[in-house]
Image (tube, rainbow, N blue to C red; front, side, top):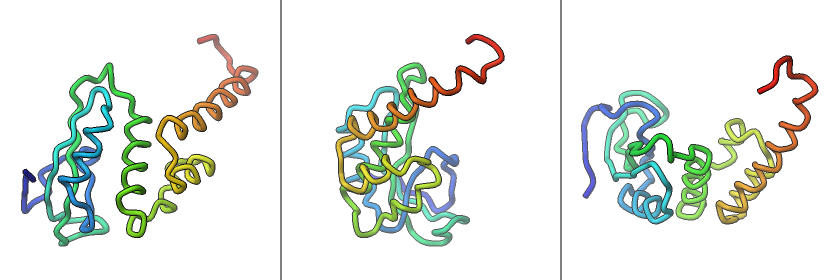
Length: 141
């Protein structure tokens, strides 16, 4: 069942929601993804600030269960993937492009690619960056 609260007692960055999100469904799909080190629980809340101030929102509360097993990038990609899959007409994925900083990753999310493929696109870019940066490092790792 959905936990509900009238005030935003959930800490920032641990709760994700919007008026158009079904918290039960999103928590179920994120849990089914089998992500390590994190648990998702459905919540209902009415934010006192933010874009949805004063509007009843559904969403998920994220609880880190094992920081050493957590893969934050994979968690973020899975959330984006599920929002695009469940709410393609409502979720404004393009608004996240400044967070992603990678047009190929954004396009893969919009195309509904599996998270493993999306992660591979980002990893390739990371490897390229790590190679380029070596000539600029002052100290060895």
